[in-house]
Image (cartoon, rainbow, N blue to C red; front, side, top):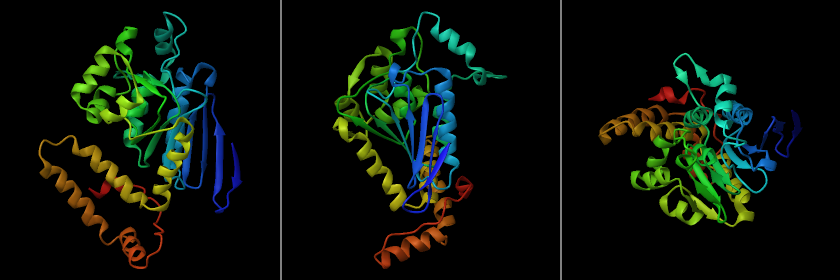
Length: 291
Protein backbone atom coordinates (compact mmCIF):
# COMPACT_ATOMS: atom_id res chain seq x y z
CA UNK A 1 0.00 0.00 0.00
CA UNK A 2 1.25 3.51 -0.81
CA UNK A 3 0.11 6.89 0.40
CA UNK A 4 0.90 10.34 -0.95
CA UNK A 5 -0.46 13.79 -0.11
CA UNK A 6 -2.97 15.33 -2.53
CA UNK A 7 -3.52 18.97 -3.32
CA UNK A 8 -6.19 19.10 -0.62
CA UNK A 9 -3.89 17.66 2.00
CA UNK A 10 -5.86 14.42 2.27
CA UNK A 11 -3.74 11.32 1.72
CA UNK A 12 -4.24 9.45 -1.54
CA UNK A 13 -4.31 5.70 -0.99
CA UNK A 14 -3.55 2.97 -3.48
CA UNK A 15 -3.34 -0.77 -3.01
CA UNK A 16 -3.27 -3.75 -5.34
CA UNK A 17 -4.78 -7.04 -4.36
CA UNK A 18 -4.24 -10.09 -6.57
CA UNK A 19 -6.70 -9.09 -9.32
CA UNK A 20 -8.25 -5.91 -7.90
CA UNK A 21 -6.75 -2.42 -7.70
CA UNK A 22 -7.89 0.15 -5.13
CA UNK A 23 -7.24 3.87 -5.27
CA UNK A 24 -8.80 6.59 -3.15
CA UNK A 25 -8.25 10.33 -3.40
CA UNK A 26 -10.27 13.54 -3.28
CA UNK A 27 -13.19 11.70 -1.65
CA UNK A 28 -13.60 9.07 -4.38
CA UNK A 29 -12.50 5.42 -4.21
CA UNK A 30 -11.96 3.64 -7.53
CA UNK A 31 -12.08 -0.15 -7.39
CA UNK A 32 -10.79 -1.73 -10.60
CA UNK A 33 -11.25 -5.35 -11.64
CA UNK A 34 -7.70 -5.85 -12.85
CA UNK A 35 -7.27 -9.04 -14.83
CA UNK A 36 -7.46 -7.71 -18.40
CA UNK A 37 -5.68 -10.77 -19.79
CA UNK A 38 -8.88 -12.76 -19.14
CA UNK A 39 -11.18 -9.75 -19.63
CA UNK A 40 -11.72 -9.55 -15.86
CA UNK A 41 -13.45 -12.90 -15.68
CA UNK A 42 -14.05 -13.85 -12.06
CA UNK A 43 -12.11 -16.33 -10.02
CA UNK A 44 -12.82 -16.78 -6.32
CA UNK A 45 -9.78 -14.77 -5.08
CA UNK A 46 -10.82 -11.81 -7.25
CA UNK A 47 -14.34 -11.82 -5.78
CA UNK A 48 -12.98 -12.09 -2.23
CA UNK A 49 -10.65 -9.15 -2.89
CA UNK A 50 -13.49 -7.13 -4.41
CA UNK A 51 -15.47 -7.69 -1.22
CA UNK A 52 -12.48 -6.50 0.84
CA UNK A 53 -12.04 -3.40 -1.32
CA UNK A 54 -15.71 -2.45 -1.01
CA UNK A 55 -15.57 -2.94 2.74
CA UNK A 56 -12.46 -0.77 2.94
CA UNK A 57 -14.11 2.04 0.96
CA UNK A 58 -17.25 1.95 3.07
CA UNK A 59 -15.25 2.17 6.31
CA UNK A 60 -12.98 5.01 5.17
CA UNK A 61 -14.40 8.32 6.46
CA UNK A 62 -12.59 10.21 3.69
CA UNK A 63 -14.43 8.31 0.94
CA UNK A 64 -17.72 9.86 -0.15
CA UNK A 65 -18.40 7.76 -3.28
CA UNK A 66 -17.12 4.56 -4.91
CA UNK A 67 -16.60 3.77 -8.59
CA UNK A 68 -16.23 0.15 -9.73
CA UNK A 69 -14.78 -0.40 -13.19
CA UNK A 70 -12.70 -2.87 -15.20
CA UNK A 71 -9.19 -2.74 -16.64
CA UNK A 72 -8.77 -3.19 -20.36
CA UNK A 73 -11.63 -3.78 -22.80
CA UNK A 74 -14.24 -5.40 -20.53
CA UNK A 75 -15.93 -4.71 -17.22
CA UNK A 76 -16.18 -8.46 -16.53
CA UNK A 77 -17.21 -11.50 -18.54
CA UNK A 78 -18.42 -13.34 -15.42
CA UNK A 79 -16.92 -16.60 -14.24
CA UNK A 80 -13.58 -17.63 -15.74
CA UNK A 81 -14.51 -20.85 -17.55
CA UNK A 82 -11.51 -23.13 -18.01
CA UNK A 83 -13.28 -26.47 -18.51
CA UNK A 84 -16.40 -28.49 -17.60
CA UNK A 85 -15.39 -28.73 -13.93
CA UNK A 86 -14.62 -24.99 -13.55
CA UNK A 87 -17.67 -24.09 -11.50
CA UNK A 88 -17.59 -27.11 -9.20
CA UNK A 89 -13.88 -26.52 -8.52
CA UNK A 90 -14.57 -22.87 -7.73
CA UNK A 91 -17.32 -23.87 -5.31
CA UNK A 92 -14.94 -26.22 -3.50
CA UNK A 93 -12.24 -23.53 -3.34
CA UNK A 94 -14.60 -20.87 -1.98
CA UNK A 95 -13.90 -21.57 1.68
CA UNK A 96 -15.70 -18.45 2.93
CA UNK A 97 -18.89 -19.48 1.16
CA UNK A 98 -19.41 -22.72 3.07
CA UNK A 99 -21.44 -21.70 6.11
CA UNK A 100 -23.35 -23.70 8.76
CA UNK A 101 -26.60 -22.81 7.00
CA UNK A 102 -25.44 -23.79 3.52
CA UNK A 103 -23.38 -22.46 0.64
CA UNK A 104 -23.48 -18.73 -0.18
CA UNK A 105 -21.91 -17.97 -3.54
CA UNK A 106 -19.48 -15.03 -3.71
CA UNK A 107 -21.35 -12.73 -6.12
CA UNK A 108 -24.33 -12.91 -3.78
CA UNK A 109 -22.14 -11.98 -0.85
CA UNK A 110 -20.84 -9.00 -2.82
CA UNK A 111 -24.38 -7.90 -3.72
CA UNK A 112 -25.40 -8.08 -0.07
CA UNK A 113 -22.40 -5.94 0.89
CA UNK A 114 -23.29 -3.45 -1.84
CA UNK A 115 -26.85 -3.32 -0.52
CA UNK A 116 -25.50 -2.49 2.95
CA UNK A 117 -23.04 0.19 1.73
CA UNK A 118 -23.45 3.63 3.27
CA UNK A 119 -21.55 5.20 0.37
CA UNK A 120 -23.06 5.45 -3.13
CA UNK A 121 -21.50 3.00 -5.60
CA UNK A 122 -21.25 3.73 -9.33
CA UNK A 123 -20.63 1.01 -11.91
CA UNK A 124 -18.49 2.39 -14.75
CA UNK A 125 -18.95 -0.08 -17.59
CA UNK A 126 -15.84 0.44 -19.69
CA UNK A 127 -16.89 -2.62 -21.71
CA UNK A 128 -18.99 -5.77 -21.67
CA UNK A 129 -20.62 -7.02 -18.46
CA UNK A 130 -21.75 -10.63 -18.74
CA UNK A 131 -22.95 -13.09 -16.09
CA UNK A 132 -21.56 -12.10 -12.70
CA UNK A 133 -20.31 -8.83 -14.14
CA UNK A 134 -23.92 -7.84 -14.84
CA UNK A 135 -25.36 -9.24 -11.61
CA UNK A 136 -23.13 -7.47 -9.11
CA UNK A 137 -23.60 -4.19 -10.96
CA UNK A 138 -27.37 -4.56 -10.54
CA UNK A 139 -26.76 -4.15 -6.80
CA UNK A 140 -24.88 -0.86 -7.30
CA UNK A 141 -26.62 2.50 -7.12
CA UNK A 142 -25.75 4.02 -10.50
CA UNK A 143 -24.66 2.37 -13.76
CA UNK A 144 -22.85 4.38 -16.44
CA UNK A 145 -22.11 2.42 -19.58
CA UNK A 146 -20.07 2.68 -22.75
CA UNK A 147 -22.23 2.84 -25.84
CA UNK A 148 -20.22 -0.15 -27.09
CA UNK A 149 -20.85 -2.32 -24.00
CA UNK A 150 -23.05 -5.40 -24.12
CA UNK A 151 -24.77 -7.14 -21.24
CA UNK A 152 -26.14 -10.58 -20.52
CA UNK A 153 -27.52 -12.70 -17.69
CA UNK A 154 -26.37 -15.84 -19.51
CA UNK A 155 -26.70 -18.42 -16.72
CA UNK A 156 -29.37 -20.58 -18.36
CA UNK A 157 -27.12 -20.89 -21.41
CA UNK A 158 -24.39 -22.30 -19.16
CA UNK A 159 -26.63 -24.82 -17.40
CA UNK A 160 -26.76 -22.98 -14.08
CA UNK A 161 -29.08 -20.31 -12.62
CA UNK A 162 -28.79 -16.59 -11.83
CA UNK A 163 -26.59 -15.53 -8.92
CA UNK A 164 -25.53 -12.30 -7.26
CA UNK A 165 -29.08 -11.83 -5.91
CA UNK A 166 -30.01 -10.74 -9.45
CA UNK A 167 -33.43 -12.38 -9.14
CA UNK A 168 -34.11 -9.75 -6.45
CA UNK A 169 -32.33 -6.68 -7.84
CA UNK A 170 -33.03 -6.97 -11.56
CA UNK A 171 -36.88 -6.94 -11.46
CA UNK A 172 -36.69 -3.87 -9.23
CA UNK A 173 -34.56 -2.11 -11.83
CA UNK A 174 -36.25 -3.09 -15.08
CA UNK A 175 -39.58 -4.70 -14.13
CA UNK A 176 -40.52 -8.35 -13.94
CA UNK A 177 -41.28 -8.63 -17.67
CA UNK A 178 -37.89 -7.46 -18.88
CA UNK A 179 -36.06 -9.32 -16.10
CA UNK A 180 -37.86 -12.52 -17.09
CA UNK A 181 -36.90 -11.99 -20.73
CA UNK A 182 -33.23 -11.40 -19.97
CA UNK A 183 -32.84 -14.12 -17.33
CA UNK A 184 -34.82 -16.94 -18.95
CA UNK A 185 -33.36 -16.52 -22.44
CA UNK A 186 -29.85 -15.58 -21.31
CA UNK A 187 -29.54 -13.45 -24.42
CA UNK A 188 -26.92 -10.72 -24.74
CA UNK A 189 -28.20 -7.19 -25.39
CA UNK A 190 -26.70 -3.80 -26.17
CA UNK A 191 -26.34 -0.59 -24.17
CA UNK A 192 -29.32 1.05 -25.89
CA UNK A 193 -31.65 -1.69 -24.67
CA UNK A 194 -30.07 -1.64 -21.21
CA UNK A 195 -30.69 2.10 -20.97
CA UNK A 196 -34.23 1.95 -22.33
CA UNK A 197 -35.09 -0.73 -19.78
CA UNK A 198 -33.64 1.24 -16.85
CA UNK A 199 -30.64 -0.95 -16.15
CA UNK A 200 -28.22 1.79 -17.23
CA UNK A 201 -28.45 5.28 -15.78
CA UNK A 202 -26.50 6.84 -18.63
CA UNK A 203 -24.88 5.77 -21.91
CA UNK A 204 -21.77 7.65 -23.00
CA UNK A 205 -18.98 7.32 -25.57
CA UNK A 206 -16.48 4.61 -24.66
CA UNK A 207 -13.67 7.08 -24.00
CA UNK A 208 -15.85 9.14 -21.64
CA UNK A 209 -17.00 6.45 -19.19
CA UNK A 210 -14.57 7.17 -16.35
CA UNK A 211 -14.72 10.93 -16.88
CA UNK A 212 -18.50 10.90 -16.57
CA UNK A 213 -18.37 8.49 -13.61
CA UNK A 214 -15.98 10.80 -11.78
CA UNK A 215 -18.12 13.83 -12.57
CA UNK A 216 -21.11 12.00 -11.17
CA UNK A 217 -19.20 10.87 -8.07
CA UNK A 218 -18.00 14.41 -7.44
CA UNK A 219 -21.57 15.43 -6.68
CA UNK A 220 -21.32 13.38 -3.49
CA UNK A 221 -17.98 14.94 -2.59
CA UNK A 222 -19.09 18.50 -3.37
CA UNK A 223 -22.83 18.81 -2.82
CA UNK A 224 -24.39 16.25 -0.49
CA UNK A 225 -24.36 15.34 3.18
CA UNK A 226 -22.79 11.87 3.58
CA UNK A 227 -25.18 11.04 6.41
CA UNK A 228 -28.19 12.16 4.38
CA UNK A 229 -27.03 10.02 1.45
CA UNK A 230 -26.60 6.97 3.72
CA UNK A 231 -30.05 7.49 5.23
CA UNK A 232 -31.63 7.98 1.82
CA UNK A 233 -30.06 4.73 0.60
CA UNK A 234 -31.61 2.92 3.57
CA UNK A 235 -35.01 4.49 2.95
CA UNK A 236 -34.95 3.41 -0.69
CA UNK A 237 -33.86 -0.10 0.28
CA UNK A 238 -36.39 -0.59 3.07
CA UNK A 239 -39.37 0.76 1.14
CA UNK A 240 -39.57 -2.39 -1.01
CA UNK A 241 -40.71 -4.47 1.94
CA UNK A 242 -43.92 -2.50 2.40
CA UNK A 243 -47.25 -3.05 0.68
CA UNK A 244 -48.55 0.40 1.64
CA UNK A 245 -46.82 3.80 1.29
CA UNK A 246 -47.76 4.73 4.86
CA UNK A 247 -45.02 2.53 6.28
CA UNK A 248 -42.41 4.14 4.04
CA UNK A 249 -43.73 7.58 4.99
CA UNK A 250 -43.39 6.66 8.67
CA UNK A 251 -39.75 5.66 8.15
CA UNK A 252 -39.11 8.92 6.31
CA UNK A 253 -40.78 10.91 9.08
CA UNK A 254 -38.61 9.35 11.77
CA UNK A 255 -35.44 9.93 9.76
CA UNK A 256 -36.49 13.46 8.85
CA UNK A 257 -37.30 14.41 12.45
CA UNK A 258 -33.89 13.13 13.57
CA UNK A 259 -32.11 15.42 11.10
CA UNK A 260 -33.93 18.77 11.22
CA UNK A 261 -31.72 20.10 14.03
CA UNK A 262 -28.55 18.33 12.96
CA UNK A 263 -25.27 19.97 12.02
CA UNK A 264 -25.93 18.78 8.47
CA UNK A 265 -29.26 20.56 8.25
CA UNK A 266 -27.88 23.76 9.75
CA UNK A 267 -24.96 23.74 7.29
CA UNK A 268 -27.23 22.92 4.36
CA UNK A 269 -29.53 25.83 5.16
CA UNK A 270 -26.77 28.36 5.89
CA UNK A 271 -24.77 27.46 2.77
CA UNK A 272 -27.92 28.05 0.71
CA UNK A 273 -28.66 31.39 2.39
CA UNK A 274 -25.02 32.49 2.11
CA UNK A 275 -24.71 31.34 -1.52
CA UNK A 276 -21.64 29.20 -0.85
CA UNK A 277 -20.69 25.53 -1.14
CA UNK A 278 -21.75 23.43 1.86
CA UNK A 279 -19.12 21.84 4.09
CA UNK A 280 -20.90 18.92 5.69
CA UNK A 281 -19.72 16.99 8.76
CA UNK A 282 -18.33 13.45 8.33
CA UNK A 283 -20.68 10.50 8.04
CA UNK A 284 -22.61 9.64 11.18
CA UNK A 285 -21.21 6.16 12.00
CA UNK A 286 -24.66 4.62 12.50
CA UNK A 287 -27.21 6.59 10.47
CA UNK A 288 -29.53 3.58 10.07
CA UNK A 289 -30.38 3.90 13.76
CA UNK A 290 -32.17 7.15 12.97
CA UNK A 291 -35.31 5.26 11.93
